[in-house]
Length: 92
Image: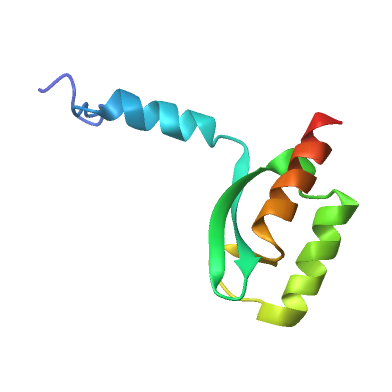
């Protein structure tokens, strides 16, 4: 009988370490599509700040603009302003 039967093995591919590092950097983060007027950028937001009142306000306002859909959360906000706000929230 095959001793490995019923066991799963992780397959290793070239470049896999780069992929693991990239995924590790996104751990505990949620992707959000941020922008307005057709200019959007995917920004990875730490889960710990999702309930921050400023993020919640933007999500509520964006719900009025975009509605609820499957897929990425969308934030109707200037990209640079959102990044600055996110930076100030995460530094506090």
